[in-house]
Image 1: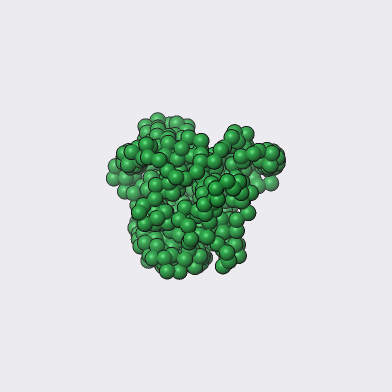
Image 2 (image 1 turned 90 degrees about the vertical axis):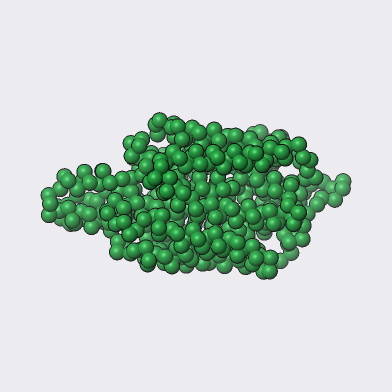
Length: 498
């Protein structure tokens, strides 16, 4: 979980180093982030059910191996295409690791129960998610961006050393039959085509012919998936999983939290890197994100105590509420905003993310019978990665849509993403202008960068608000078993799985 959390956010901070080393433009750079998220989302459900076929520990170890291969490939990447391919391999490894980590804790719980293991797992993930930008920034500035992936490899080896001894240990968790190869292929295709189209929307245009064709292909795949799953004896997701109110509510909350966390970190990084290009050292991603990071770590631990006294519902919804306030506060950012003025909203976002994320695994997984555990783990992982992919895709569209009028006779400022890629291109653009036009050009570029970030935070805030409101409805008090049975409600002997 530490590897996945750091990997998801550290790479966003390393973009300038990658762009300089491999001569990347902003469009190519976005795919280095997107390839990982799209692959992970596409195969998360498959990764969840693979534990039923190959065994949970074997799936987990296989995920470590695949992720490690991707990390080595990324560290050695000589070109953009190689790096994007390596990131896709890492995404495949993450699709195996994230759900199987849930299944592994449930199959081999600590003495205090699976809930304790899930909370520890969530605390590590949320903390690593917040630490990622600091790790990425430090290694990129003082070593090389490639060191991020070597660091991941060290953590993966440690995880393998700890996990391999579990291969021979039995588990009392059931392994229901899974023979849904067509459903697995259609699910991966549907998620990949849908998210890929959303990701390409900024360059294709939301109302373009290519988007219409992609929407048609997505609808066709969805119809085929429904048809196949209705006729399959052992589908990837049984009806019980898709109709459980608490499970769906927890996954909606997870979607909301993922949109918020990655949306903030990815686009704040672009904003902070743009400020660095403008020679504004006071606003650095590493320094400005310290309140956010410390808040995530501290309140992830606090959330564990709150959940023990108040249950999961109140802390999760309160955390999302605090994050919403922080996002709307950040939407007021201007070119003159400094890191001290950003500290309070970033702290609110960190507190909210820490509290919300630490309490989401249990309600998403433990309300279901033991036979449905792997399905619930896959769905939960899918929600994580879909939220992250949507944050980058829709946020990029919003970020690029902001245009600032430039003074007469001055060229339009560079797109904020291009500015964030490095100083050389921006400096070259300045040098082509007459001396009296340079200051207006830079002022317009500053304004565009801040306006893009503010607009993206506003869109993310409204997305969180809508999803959180839906979570409130779904997670309302009622009959539930999340706190009664640490590994899901057992199925009575002889009873058919629901």
